[in-house]
Image 1 (tube, rainbow, N blue to C red):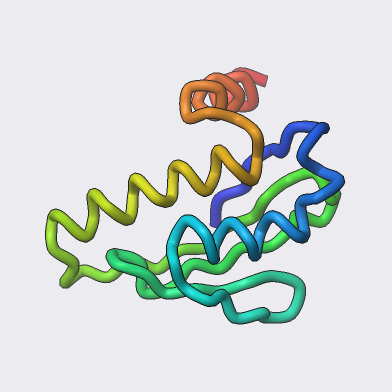
Image 2 (image 1 turned 180 degrees about the horizontal axis):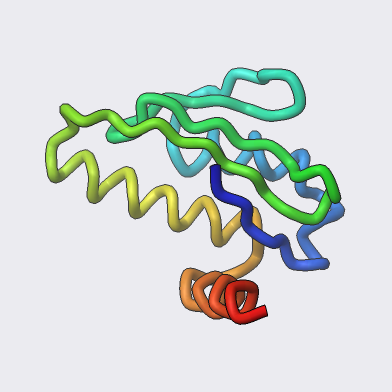
Length: 105
């Protein structure tokens, strides 16, 4: 399970963006599961996304497909990074910086 902070400006539309982002960036129809959404795409057997308990984070659970080709893995990772940037409002570089800050305390 991974938890990502969401920019304050993105929190308001977070619930809507979770599903729309999956639909647009992965090109599959997400299945609503409880308080989140689940998809299967490329190198991901399953990706489940929901809003964190505090309402200001994105919680993701992934299950990888070990039989995926290198091309599927690269495509899936590219789409996954774009999805995180769209929904959280933070670029990959910014997310790394924030996670380092969290670890340092």
